[in-house]
Amino acid sequence: MQKLIDLSSNNKDVTSWPMVKAAGFEGMIHRATIGLDQLDVMFVPRMLAAHAAGLVCGATHLFFPSDDPKLQAQQFAAKMNRFAPLPLAVDLEWVTKNGKQDWDQVDDPEGLVDTFLKELETFFNGKILIYMGRPFASQYLPEWKSGFPLWVPDYSNDPPHLPANFSTYAIWQTGQGTVAGVQGPVDLDQTAEGVNLSDLLCYTA
Image 1 (tube, rainbow, N blue to C red):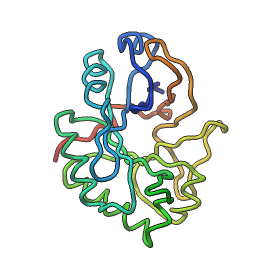
Image 2: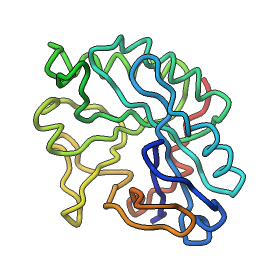
Image 3: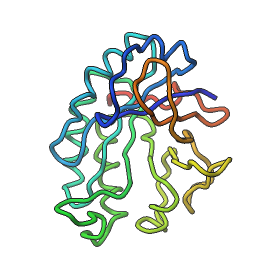
Image 4: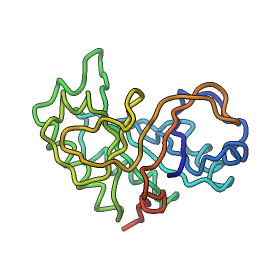
């Protein structure tokens, strides 16, 4: 089991990546892109600094179902090439656009996610992580079977409760806490037994 943290620009400053590593964290996953045209402003500087400190660094894309899934995958991939190989994840959770829940605006959520993943696979070899919790999956993707490794958030149960069509997970987001070298609370994660962060690397195709 390996410990890691995940971040976005919503988190406060990271003052010392060597301190993060010394605290026993071997990896960091950062939100990179959002929908069609947004880049998280802290993604590049934190990726470079964390990598220099010796952490395995990964990236997530926050998926908006009403945006073109192929274009989302293409723009995400374009930002990732300089950092490959790295773990990659698509973040499937409740998102709002123009004051409305975006998942309520589409008719085929499973097909849209599949299109995104298929397009991203044209740029990278490896297993793309699916960040998705059981409550969200039950509401919007209850029958979806992805074949990709799961990154599951569950702050209440040990072991975590998984979406209906997943029997295992690769990463578990266990909750929030404080970490030396990071200001304020941060999401805490750990790999499943027998899963190494190196197993989750995606390479440019």
